[in-house]
Each structure stands twice: as structure tokens, then as C-alpha cells.
Amino acid sequence: MRPLFDSGTSADGFLNVALPKGRLGERVYAMLAQAGFPCPELLDPKRKLIFENPEAKVRYFWVKPSDVPAYVERGAADVGVAGKDILLEYAPSVYELLDLEIGKCRMCVAALEGFRDNPDQKLRVATEFPNIAQSYYSSQSRDIDVVRLHGSIEIAPILGMTDVIVDIVETGTTLKENGLTPIETIVDISARLIANKVSYQFKYEAIQTLFQGLQEQVAAKEAAQ
Image 1 (cartoon, rainbow, N blue to C red):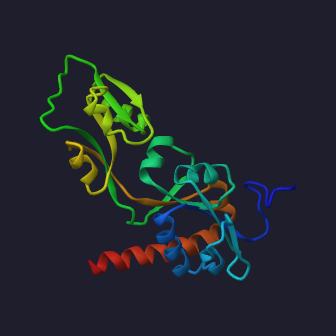
Image 2: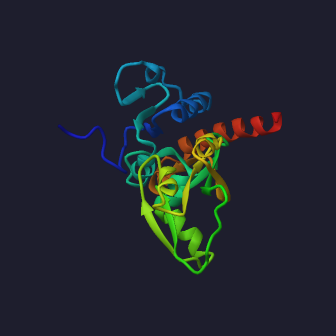
């Protein structure tokens, strides 16, 4: 079976968009549709992953949030939306065009209440984001031992496996329920519009139309606050 289109060389005139699966992706799609790139078929509850609207010349596909930058960097998608956490962790070679001001949260260091850091000992850090953690503590000349975990990392300090965790914090409820508290904010996180560098040249007009439509929505939301 031949590919739907060749990565980075799609000449069918469609703008290929990688959307993160889940609630964030649904919010992003609503903004994209308002910006002039609707695709009603995408709202179909069937288990399809790729959707097209020939009239709007747009093709959407759902992917795992952490995979969006890979699809964009490799040219399978012309544009996509990814969290700033993913961009910082994987540092893909893409253009970051716009902060959509949605999906807001924080990347934080959290520890058990009453924790006191001992600078004479290596700090043990549990995280799903080893590159972000390493970069943050390197900027402080702090020696750390990273323990990479995938989910429920709040347990690590409770069991004494690590001293702290580096993780995304939205409301802080999960931390509080497990006796942890944020002690440092590393960076604020939100959803970003990203573009493939080659596509940005060859599909500039379509990408600019999308960009401007989204930018107007972000500006209107900020003005209303």
C-alpha cells in the first residue's frame, strides 16, 4: 500500500495538521475551524485517525500528544500543536509560531512537605522529563540523579526512592492528596502552534492564513480578560 502522501513533499495542496488526541486536541480543532480550516468529518465518533475537507484543503490526523513534534519535524504534518513541555523535552527542529494560551499548566519541582535539600548530596529526581530536569539543575550547578518514570511519579518520594519530582502541575490536587507540595516552578506550559521548516516556505500562504486566524482569537481572548 502506497503512503497517503510523501512526507515533506505533499503537492496535493492540502495543509496537513497533526492534532494531539484528547480534550486539548478538541479545543485546538475548534480554534482551527474558526480560523477557516473546518473539517466536520473530524467530529465523527468513528475510530478513524485521518480526516479531510477538500473544500478547505485541510487534512487532520490524531496522534499521541508527545508525538506531534515528530510528525511535524519529519514533514508528515505541515503544522501541529504541542505543549511547551514536549518542545522543551525533545527540542525538535521546527518553527514555534504562536502561544495559543490554552492547556496552561506549570512544570514544577515538588517534594514531600517539610523537605530540605542537602547540597552536599546528589539530589534524586523522579520525572518523565529528564532533559528538562537535567537542564534546569545544570543551570544551578546542582548534581542530580535522574530516575525516569512514566506515570504516578508522586509515589517515588513517598517510598523514599527519590527526594523530589519534576512534573506538570495543573491544579496541584494530586500532589496535595499525596502529601507533596510544589517548591519551585521551572517554566509555564501552554499549547504552541508549530510548523515544519520546509512547509513554512512552500505552504507559507496557507500557514499564514491559519496563523493569523489563531492569532486573532488569542488576542480577542486576552482583550476580554
